[in-house]
Image (cartoon, rainbow, N blue to C red; front, side, top):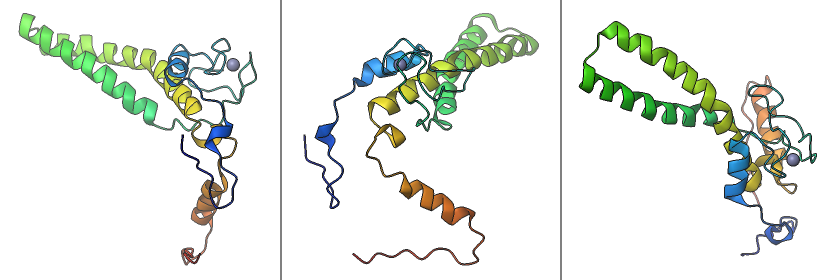
Length: 163
Ligand SMILES: [Zn+2]
């Protein structure tokens, strides 16, 4: 693996043990902590626990944002649209029957898939040491960016590209 030590000499990829990507993703998909696979990842329906109740691994670093919703739409859309087309071609039912079938099914499937998809994404972020899951990550970049947005300054911050 390539040495990624930057100018500051802080970031060294080799210092950290590798995390299994696929296993972490699967543990997250079963709503378990990606580190130990035993503790519950969620403390409420979609609320990720700050730390794993079993091994204490910090899980609050995740930034799943709207990626779970995006992937859930992709999955549920493929299932429901396939069924709609198949049922329409086979039985040609009335429109009200289509609505009565597919609208509740879409809602139910979305609510069923959403936690697993979010769990898988948090597991993936943990395995790849994304965001705060990397102890050497420089979180200041995000903080200063947010500070620039929330400031009521009339002029935008000037970027300084001098070395
Ligand atoms: Zn754990």
